[in-house]
Length: 380
Ligand SMILES: Nc1ncnc2c1ncn2[C@@H]1O[C@H](COP(=O)(O)OP(=O)(O)OP(=O)(O)O)[C@@H](O)[C@H]1O
Image (tube, rainbow, N blue to C red; front, side):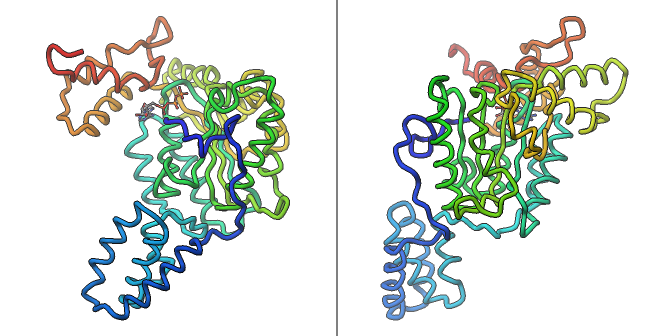
């Protein structure tokens, strides 16, 4: 997953707190543009609407004044679309009340995420329940655990796209990567302050902001506890309500516990799909609480029960790796060549040593291996 630009990054390079606004609203310049657009629109015929919308599309790439001007004209001509509706088609708006399209999320998870029946089920239920609740008592906090390349970042991307149309590129989605944004053990206090300011500023600007913390297992102990007040059941903290925000933590910690359970099922001849959340959730929460290298070691987030779901990502098998290869071929617009699919899958390494069931990198190197096999003869 790409690192955020320094404008959105939290860490040493953040120099200012984002503007604190309780209601996200179009800028004054945009509104002035709208009014000018209204006047101009009255002089134009309705036939110009389509042309204006086209111009708005182009103007969206430039500045809010042009967007406001063109959109104002178009709203005046059409007469039934509100300014906000139209404005938000061209500029990204934070729409807190916008319901989640649960069937779209379900379809995305079921079609794109392989071998993760628990993650699919829990993420779908947790997000749907949370977004349907008009008055949540706390923000939603999910902790995703599992071996490398099993789909944690991939799922976060799917969630981001279903919550905010621009997905990871949305200004309401914020990705923190421990080794990038919080690298120095000596600067924990600084990181804690910055994290608090950063989250407060962004939630003030958009209550339904999404925060993703990648590499939690590499986060210095204690850093994450700085955000505890925001995850708790308070109605407001210093005038800001955090109850509609969503926090997702990604971690390799607990991967060994998940693999052990999956392996026990396999050895007992039981189906992987029979593993239930209750087989793993408690083991995971206790495991990461007691693991010094989990980012949640002795964390108040766990002992105050502020993490709503611990979600296990199971290690991927040979057949799942093949599914990843096919998905990647489809995404590239290439024909599905089963010889290439098998070749890529067979190049991956599998564990445990004797049974060789699970891919040790999940689907992580599928793309680069495919580049190699798809390269024209003589290249690569
Ligand atoms: N379960 C899965 N279903 C479909 N594709 C997957 C799955 N797991 C991984 N992939 C593919 O592999 C790529 C790498 O996976 P991803 O970055 O999500 O792994 P991760 O679990 O976040 O690993 P890490 O812990 O190392 O960060 C994804 O972009 C996706 O294309």
